[in-house]
Length: 162
Image (tube, rainbow, N blue to C red; front, side):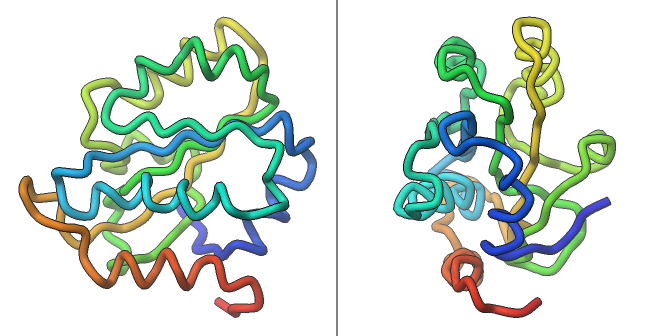
């Protein structure tokens, strides 16, 4: 299950957490077309003052290398951002339900994001949020599509209605 969202809805969803207790983790591979979307998204997110005290981790294609850094930030919530293929419209940005991740291609990365969640949970109580960006292509050697770039820019227009 997924819920299409915009920046205002994201800030509302995370409003119950102190900004300094939010860890955003951008996932993606710059060599695989739209799989770069999670990394581009987190770079834009870093500029938003509402999250100025949050932790931003650009994990790329190896989130397992950042487990210690995530835990050191002492988060109440970890927000994973990645290209995810759930059959939505190209560029659709959605909140993904944790239970549905098994049926969604959330990542082109070696480690299952649910395995990473399990490891983090064994070390500290925290919540997890998953933001997926529906890719057009994740083919090797392709650049990120213009549709994805436009969708990310549009996401951050706060008064945009869905």
